[in-house]
Image (cartoon, rainbow, N blue to C red; front, side, top):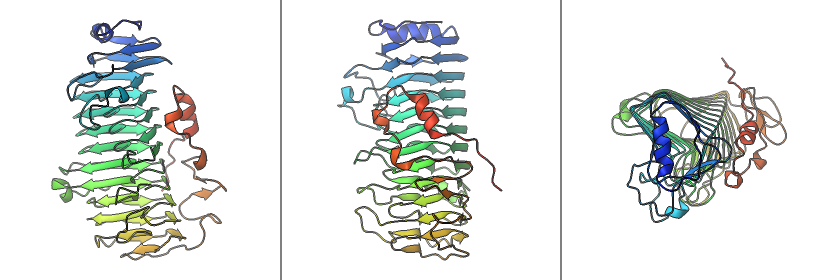
Length: 414
Protein backbone atom coordinates (compact mmCIF):
# COMPACT_ATOMS: atom_id res chain seq x y z
CA UNK A 1 0.00 0.00 0.00
CA UNK A 2 1.45 3.38 -1.03
CA UNK A 3 0.72 6.54 0.94
CA UNK A 4 1.61 10.13 0.14
CA UNK A 5 2.99 12.82 2.45
CA UNK A 6 1.71 16.33 2.73
CA UNK A 7 -1.58 15.55 4.45
CA UNK A 8 -1.89 18.10 7.22
CA UNK A 9 -2.14 17.32 10.90
CA UNK A 10 -3.81 14.21 12.24
CA UNK A 11 -4.56 12.76 8.81
CA UNK A 12 -0.95 11.65 8.53
CA UNK A 13 -1.06 9.02 11.27
CA UNK A 14 -4.76 8.29 10.68
CA UNK A 15 -4.12 7.28 7.07
CA UNK A 16 -1.08 5.24 8.05
CA UNK A 17 -2.99 3.51 10.85
CA UNK A 18 -5.88 2.71 8.53
CA UNK A 19 -3.54 1.00 6.11
CA UNK A 20 -1.70 -0.83 8.89
CA UNK A 21 -5.03 -2.41 9.85
CA UNK A 22 -5.02 -4.14 6.46
CA UNK A 23 -1.59 -5.73 7.03
CA UNK A 24 1.14 -6.24 4.45
CA UNK A 25 3.66 -3.60 3.33
CA UNK A 26 2.90 0.06 4.04
CA UNK A 27 5.27 2.23 2.00
CA UNK A 28 5.73 5.91 2.85
CA UNK A 29 7.23 7.85 -0.07
CA UNK A 30 9.77 10.60 0.50
CA UNK A 31 8.35 13.56 2.38
CA UNK A 32 7.76 14.77 5.93
CA UNK A 33 4.96 13.17 7.94
CA UNK A 34 4.04 15.35 10.94
CA UNK A 35 2.24 13.33 13.59
CA UNK A 36 -0.26 14.62 16.10
CA UNK A 37 -0.78 11.14 17.58
CA UNK A 38 0.99 7.77 17.49
CA UNK A 39 1.30 5.40 14.58
CA UNK A 40 -0.17 2.10 15.85
CA UNK A 41 1.54 -1.06 14.62
CA UNK A 42 -0.42 -4.19 13.72
CA UNK A 43 0.73 -7.80 13.40
CA UNK A 44 2.21 -9.11 10.16
CA UNK A 45 3.08 -5.68 8.76
CA UNK A 46 6.06 -3.89 7.26
CA UNK A 47 6.24 -0.13 7.74
CA UNK A 48 8.85 1.24 5.35
CA UNK A 49 10.09 4.44 3.81
CA UNK A 50 12.73 5.46 1.32
CA UNK A 51 15.48 8.10 1.25
CA UNK A 52 13.79 11.33 2.30
CA UNK A 53 10.94 9.77 4.30
CA UNK A 54 10.84 11.67 7.62
CA UNK A 55 8.49 11.09 10.55
CA UNK A 56 8.37 13.90 13.10
CA UNK A 57 6.16 15.77 15.55
CA UNK A 58 5.25 19.47 15.73
CA UNK A 59 6.77 22.02 18.06
CA UNK A 60 5.20 22.05 21.54
CA UNK A 61 3.37 18.81 20.73
CA UNK A 62 1.97 18.46 24.25
CA UNK A 63 1.73 14.66 24.25
CA UNK A 64 1.60 12.80 27.60
CA UNK A 65 4.49 10.70 28.82
CA UNK A 66 4.82 7.21 27.30
CA UNK A 67 3.03 8.13 24.08
CA UNK A 68 5.64 7.35 21.40
CA UNK A 69 5.75 8.32 17.77
CA UNK A 70 5.35 4.65 16.78
CA UNK A 71 3.59 2.27 19.18
CA UNK A 72 3.20 -1.50 19.28
CA UNK A 73 1.34 -3.47 21.93
CA UNK A 74 0.82 -7.23 21.83
CA UNK A 75 1.64 -7.61 18.13
CA UNK A 76 4.05 -9.87 16.26
CA UNK A 77 5.94 -10.18 12.99
CA UNK A 78 6.75 -6.48 12.63
CA UNK A 79 9.35 -4.84 10.38
CA UNK A 80 10.23 -1.13 10.42
CA UNK A 81 12.79 -0.06 7.83
CA UNK A 82 14.18 2.81 5.81
CA UNK A 83 12.68 5.59 7.93
CA UNK A 84 14.15 8.75 9.39
CA UNK A 85 12.56 9.62 12.73
CA UNK A 86 13.24 13.19 13.84
CA UNK A 87 11.64 13.45 17.29
CA UNK A 88 12.09 17.24 17.35
CA UNK A 89 13.65 17.75 20.76
CA UNK A 90 14.53 21.36 19.96
CA UNK A 91 10.91 22.19 19.24
CA UNK A 92 9.80 20.55 22.50
CA UNK A 93 12.51 21.87 24.78
CA UNK A 94 10.00 22.53 27.58
CA UNK A 95 9.87 18.72 28.06
CA UNK A 96 12.65 16.90 29.99
CA UNK A 97 15.02 14.35 28.53
CA UNK A 98 14.72 10.70 29.59
CA UNK A 99 11.33 10.99 31.28
CA UNK A 100 9.24 8.91 28.89
CA UNK A 101 8.31 11.60 26.39
CA UNK A 102 8.37 11.10 22.61
CA UNK A 103 10.19 7.80 22.37
CA UNK A 104 10.66 7.12 18.67
CA UNK A 105 9.35 3.54 18.89
CA UNK A 106 7.95 1.85 22.00
CA UNK A 107 6.77 -1.75 21.86
CA UNK A 108 5.37 -3.94 24.65
CA UNK A 109 4.64 -7.69 24.56
CA UNK A 110 5.73 -8.01 20.94
CA UNK A 111 7.51 -10.88 19.19
CA UNK A 112 9.56 -11.16 16.01
CA UNK A 113 10.53 -7.52 15.53
CA UNK A 114 13.04 -6.12 13.04
CA UNK A 115 14.10 -2.46 12.94
CA UNK A 116 16.78 -1.67 10.38
CA UNK A 117 18.15 0.95 7.98
CA UNK A 118 16.56 3.71 10.05
CA UNK A 119 17.86 7.03 11.35
CA UNK A 120 16.83 8.17 14.85
CA UNK A 121 17.77 11.66 15.96
CA UNK A 122 16.93 14.77 17.97
CA UNK A 123 14.69 13.07 20.51
CA UNK A 124 13.85 13.35 24.18
CA UNK A 125 13.60 9.60 24.72
CA UNK A 126 14.71 6.27 23.24
CA UNK A 127 15.20 5.19 19.65
CA UNK A 128 13.69 1.72 20.07
CA UNK A 129 12.36 0.90 23.52
CA UNK A 130 10.95 -2.61 23.81
CA UNK A 131 9.57 -4.46 26.84
CA UNK A 132 8.51 -8.06 27.60
CA UNK A 133 9.24 -9.10 24.04
CA UNK A 134 11.36 -11.66 22.20
CA UNK A 135 13.18 -12.22 18.92
CA UNK A 136 14.27 -8.64 18.34
CA UNK A 137 16.75 -7.39 15.74
CA UNK A 138 18.01 -3.79 15.64
CA UNK A 139 20.61 -3.26 12.93
CA UNK A 140 22.10 -0.94 10.29
CA UNK A 141 20.68 2.08 12.10
CA UNK A 142 22.09 5.56 12.60
CA UNK A 143 21.43 7.11 16.04
CA UNK A 144 22.36 10.51 17.46
CA UNK A 145 21.11 13.36 19.68
CA UNK A 146 18.50 11.29 21.50
CA UNK A 147 17.30 11.90 25.05
CA UNK A 148 17.86 8.43 26.45
CA UNK A 149 19.00 5.12 24.85
CA UNK A 150 19.49 4.29 21.20
CA UNK A 151 18.14 0.81 21.96
CA UNK A 152 16.61 -0.23 25.30
CA UNK A 153 15.44 -3.82 25.85
CA UNK A 154 13.53 -4.45 29.08
CA UNK A 155 12.55 -7.91 30.41
CA UNK A 156 13.03 -9.31 26.92
CA UNK A 157 14.63 -12.34 25.29
CA UNK A 158 16.66 -13.09 22.17
CA UNK A 159 17.94 -9.66 21.25
CA UNK A 160 20.52 -8.90 18.57
CA UNK A 161 21.85 -5.40 17.89
CA UNK A 162 24.52 -5.06 15.22
CA UNK A 163 26.02 -2.76 12.58
CA UNK A 164 24.61 0.34 14.26
CA UNK A 165 26.37 3.73 14.31
CA UNK A 166 25.48 5.49 17.56
CA UNK A 167 26.48 8.75 19.21
CA UNK A 168 25.18 8.93 22.78
CA UNK A 169 23.41 11.86 24.36
CA UNK A 170 21.80 11.83 27.84
CA UNK A 171 22.37 8.12 28.55
CA UNK A 172 23.58 4.96 26.75
CA UNK A 173 23.88 3.68 23.21
CA UNK A 174 22.67 0.11 23.71
CA UNK A 175 21.07 -1.04 26.97
CA UNK A 176 19.27 -4.04 28.39
CA UNK A 177 17.56 -4.40 31.74
CA UNK A 178 16.59 -7.82 33.13
CA UNK A 179 16.95 -9.41 29.70
CA UNK A 180 18.66 -12.57 28.47
CA UNK A 181 20.04 -14.20 25.33
CA UNK A 182 21.51 -10.98 24.00
CA UNK A 183 24.12 -10.28 21.30
CA UNK A 184 25.55 -6.78 20.84
CA UNK A 185 28.13 -6.88 18.06
CA UNK A 186 29.76 -4.94 15.22
CA UNK A 187 28.53 -1.55 16.42
CA UNK A 188 30.44 1.73 16.43
CA UNK A 189 29.56 3.88 19.45
CA UNK A 190 30.91 7.26 20.51
CA UNK A 191 29.54 10.26 22.41
CA UNK A 192 28.52 13.85 22.08
CA UNK A 193 31.54 15.28 23.86
CA UNK A 194 29.96 17.65 26.35
CA UNK A 195 28.13 17.47 29.69
CA UNK A 196 25.06 16.10 27.87
CA UNK A 197 27.05 13.32 26.23
CA UNK A 198 25.39 10.52 28.18
CA UNK A 199 27.26 7.78 30.01
CA UNK A 200 28.05 4.28 28.76
CA UNK A 201 28.27 3.02 25.23
CA UNK A 202 26.70 -0.28 26.33
CA UNK A 203 24.82 -0.86 29.60
CA UNK A 204 23.85 -4.28 30.97
CA UNK A 205 21.58 -4.05 34.03
CA UNK A 206 20.26 -6.77 36.33
CA UNK A 207 17.86 -6.08 39.20
CA UNK A 208 15.89 -9.33 39.33
CA UNK A 209 18.53 -11.99 38.63
CA UNK A 210 17.43 -12.87 35.08
CA UNK A 211 20.34 -11.53 33.02
CA UNK A 212 22.21 -14.36 31.31
CA UNK A 213 23.74 -15.49 28.03
CA UNK A 214 24.88 -11.99 27.07
CA UNK A 215 27.72 -11.52 24.58
CA UNK A 216 29.38 -8.22 23.59
CA UNK A 217 31.84 -8.54 20.72
CA UNK A 218 33.41 -6.94 17.63
CA UNK A 219 32.39 -3.42 18.69
CA UNK A 220 34.37 -0.19 18.39
CA UNK A 221 33.80 1.99 21.47
CA UNK A 222 35.40 5.30 20.64
CA UNK A 223 35.66 8.25 23.05
CA UNK A 224 32.54 7.46 25.05
CA UNK A 225 31.61 10.07 27.64
CA UNK A 226 31.32 7.66 30.58
CA UNK A 227 32.00 3.93 30.49
CA UNK A 228 32.58 1.90 27.36
CA UNK A 229 30.60 -0.96 28.94
CA UNK A 230 28.77 -0.73 32.26
CA UNK A 231 27.72 -3.87 34.14
CA UNK A 232 25.40 -2.97 37.00
CA UNK A 233 23.50 -5.28 39.37
CA UNK A 234 21.36 -4.41 42.37
CA UNK A 235 18.42 -5.83 44.36
CA UNK A 236 17.99 -9.50 43.34
CA UNK A 237 20.53 -9.06 40.58
CA UNK A 238 23.43 -9.27 43.03
CA UNK A 239 22.57 -12.93 43.72
CA UNK A 240 22.90 -13.85 40.06
CA UNK A 241 26.06 -15.01 38.27
CA UNK A 242 25.57 -13.35 34.91
CA UNK A 243 28.67 -14.69 33.10
CA UNK A 244 28.72 -11.98 30.44
CA UNK A 245 31.22 -12.49 27.60
CA UNK A 246 33.09 -9.39 26.38
CA UNK A 247 35.57 -10.07 23.61
CA UNK A 248 37.18 -8.73 20.42
CA UNK A 249 36.17 -5.13 21.14
CA UNK A 250 38.25 -2.00 20.70
CA UNK A 251 37.99 0.50 23.57
CA UNK A 252 39.67 3.65 22.32
CA UNK A 253 39.99 6.68 24.64
CA UNK A 254 36.72 5.81 26.40
CA UNK A 255 35.75 7.71 29.55
CA UNK A 256 36.14 11.30 28.35
CA UNK A 257 33.83 12.78 31.01
CA UNK A 258 34.89 15.33 33.58
CA UNK A 259 31.56 15.08 35.48
CA UNK A 260 31.03 11.28 35.86
CA UNK A 261 33.29 9.68 38.49
CA UNK A 262 33.28 6.05 37.33
CA UNK A 263 34.44 6.39 33.75
CA UNK A 264 36.58 3.80 32.01
CA UNK A 265 36.61 0.95 29.55
CA UNK A 266 34.54 -1.62 31.45
CA UNK A 267 33.11 -0.70 34.86
CA UNK A 268 31.62 -3.47 36.99
CA UNK A 269 29.09 -2.63 39.68
CA UNK A 270 27.88 -6.03 40.83
CA UNK A 271 28.21 -8.62 38.05
CA UNK A 272 29.95 -11.97 38.58
CA UNK A 273 31.56 -14.48 36.26
CA UNK A 274 32.39 -11.98 33.52
CA UNK A 275 34.89 -13.13 30.90
CA UNK A 276 36.92 -10.37 29.25
CA UNK A 277 39.25 -11.55 26.51
CA UNK A 278 40.91 -10.52 23.24
CA UNK A 279 40.05 -6.83 23.59
CA UNK A 280 42.19 -3.72 23.15
CA UNK A 281 42.00 -0.89 25.68
CA UNK A 282 44.00 2.07 24.35
CA UNK A 283 44.12 5.51 25.94
CA UNK A 284 41.22 4.83 28.32
CA UNK A 285 40.66 7.39 31.08
CA UNK A 286 40.42 6.30 34.73
CA UNK A 287 40.71 2.48 34.29
CA UNK A 288 40.42 0.01 31.46
CA UNK A 289 38.64 -2.37 33.86
CA UNK A 290 37.30 -0.97 37.12
CA UNK A 291 35.70 -3.40 39.56
CA UNK A 292 33.61 -1.48 42.08
CA UNK A 293 31.33 -4.22 43.47
CA UNK A 294 31.22 -8.04 43.46
CA UNK A 295 33.22 -9.31 40.48
CA UNK A 296 33.87 -12.82 41.78
CA UNK A 297 34.80 -15.24 39.01
CA UNK A 298 35.91 -12.51 36.60
CA UNK A 299 38.49 -13.71 34.08
CA UNK A 300 40.63 -11.19 32.19
CA UNK A 301 42.93 -12.76 29.61
CA UNK A 302 44.65 -12.10 26.27
CA UNK A 303 43.87 -8.37 26.19
CA UNK A 304 45.98 -5.30 25.43
CA UNK A 305 46.03 -2.56 28.09
CA UNK A 306 48.01 0.47 26.95
CA UNK A 307 48.18 4.22 27.58
CA UNK A 308 45.65 4.24 30.45
CA UNK A 309 45.53 7.68 32.08
CA UNK A 310 43.93 9.19 35.16
CA UNK A 311 40.37 10.47 35.25
CA UNK A 312 39.96 13.73 33.36
CA UNK A 313 38.97 15.73 36.46
CA UNK A 314 37.96 13.68 39.51
CA UNK A 315 40.62 12.33 41.86
CA UNK A 316 39.69 8.85 43.09
CA UNK A 317 41.12 5.60 44.37
CA UNK A 318 42.90 3.51 41.77
CA UNK A 319 42.66 5.96 38.90
CA UNK A 320 45.27 5.70 36.15
CA UNK A 321 45.81 1.93 36.51
CA UNK A 322 44.84 -0.42 33.71
CA UNK A 323 42.94 -2.70 36.11
CA UNK A 324 41.61 -1.67 39.52
CA UNK A 325 39.87 -4.16 41.81
CA UNK A 326 38.27 -1.99 44.47
CA UNK A 327 36.02 -4.83 45.68
CA UNK A 328 38.78 -7.37 46.40
CA UNK A 329 37.23 -10.00 44.13
CA UNK A 330 40.44 -11.91 43.43
CA UNK A 331 40.27 -11.38 39.68
CA UNK A 332 41.98 -13.86 37.35
CA UNK A 333 44.31 -11.74 35.19
CA UNK A 334 46.49 -13.82 32.83
CA UNK A 335 48.32 -13.55 29.50
CA UNK A 336 47.64 -9.85 29.00
CA UNK A 337 49.80 -7.14 27.45
CA UNK A 338 50.45 -4.07 29.65
CA UNK A 339 52.31 -1.00 28.44
CA UNK A 340 52.61 2.67 29.40
CA UNK A 341 49.73 2.84 31.90
CA UNK A 342 50.10 6.10 33.83
CA UNK A 343 49.95 4.94 37.45
CA UNK A 344 50.64 1.25 36.93
CA UNK A 345 49.19 -1.90 35.47
CA UNK A 346 47.05 -3.25 38.31
CA UNK A 347 45.65 -1.93 41.59
CA UNK A 348 44.76 -4.36 44.39
CA UNK A 349 45.01 -7.47 42.24
CA UNK A 350 47.75 -9.70 40.85
CA UNK A 351 48.74 -10.73 37.34
CA UNK A 352 50.47 -13.71 35.72
CA UNK A 353 52.20 -14.38 32.40
CA UNK A 354 52.09 -10.70 31.44
CA UNK A 355 53.77 -9.17 28.40
CA UNK A 356 55.27 -5.74 29.18
CA UNK A 357 56.55 -4.88 25.71
CA UNK A 358 55.01 -2.18 23.50
CA UNK A 359 52.02 -3.94 21.84
CA UNK A 360 52.38 -1.75 18.76
CA UNK A 361 55.71 -3.38 17.93
CA UNK A 362 54.94 -7.11 18.08
CA UNK A 363 52.16 -9.66 17.95
CA UNK A 364 50.43 -10.21 21.29
CA UNK A 365 48.17 -13.00 22.49
CA UNK A 366 45.20 -10.66 21.97
CA UNK A 367 45.11 -11.33 18.22
CA UNK A 368 45.09 -7.58 17.51
CA UNK A 369 47.68 -5.78 15.37
CA UNK A 370 48.66 -2.11 15.27
CA UNK A 371 48.68 -0.92 11.64
CA UNK A 372 50.52 2.33 12.31
CA UNK A 373 47.33 4.33 12.79
CA UNK A 374 44.71 1.95 14.19
CA UNK A 375 44.07 -1.52 15.61
CA UNK A 376 42.73 -4.48 13.69
CA UNK A 377 42.05 -8.18 14.19
CA UNK A 378 40.46 -10.96 12.16
CA UNK A 379 36.94 -10.10 13.31
CA UNK A 380 37.24 -6.28 13.41
CA UNK A 381 38.64 -4.63 10.31
CA UNK A 382 40.69 -1.42 10.49
CA UNK A 383 38.91 1.85 11.22
CA UNK A 384 40.92 5.05 11.23
CA UNK A 385 40.13 6.24 14.73
CA UNK A 386 40.85 9.89 14.10
CA UNK A 387 38.44 10.05 11.17
CA UNK A 388 35.29 8.35 12.47
CA UNK A 389 32.66 10.86 11.25
CA UNK A 390 30.54 12.75 13.75
CA UNK A 391 26.95 11.60 13.44
CA UNK A 392 25.66 15.10 14.03
CA UNK A 393 26.90 16.11 10.58
CA UNK A 394 25.26 13.20 8.75
CA UNK A 395 21.83 13.18 7.12
CA UNK A 396 20.42 10.30 5.10
CA UNK A 397 23.78 8.70 4.36
CA UNK A 398 23.17 5.49 6.26
CA UNK A 399 24.68 3.07 3.79
CA UNK A 400 27.92 5.03 3.67
CA UNK A 401 28.10 4.78 7.45
CA UNK A 402 27.42 1.07 7.41
CA UNK A 403 30.15 0.46 4.86
CA UNK A 404 32.54 2.57 6.97
CA UNK A 405 31.94 0.18 9.86
CA UNK A 406 33.42 -2.54 7.61
CA UNK A 407 31.26 -5.26 9.07
CA UNK A 408 32.87 -8.67 9.16
CA UNK A 409 31.02 -11.76 10.36
CA UNK A 410 32.42 -12.93 13.66
CA UNK A 411 35.15 -15.55 13.37
CA UNK A 412 35.05 -17.96 16.28
CA UNK A 413 38.33 -17.92 18.14
CA UNK A 414 38.87 -20.88 20.41
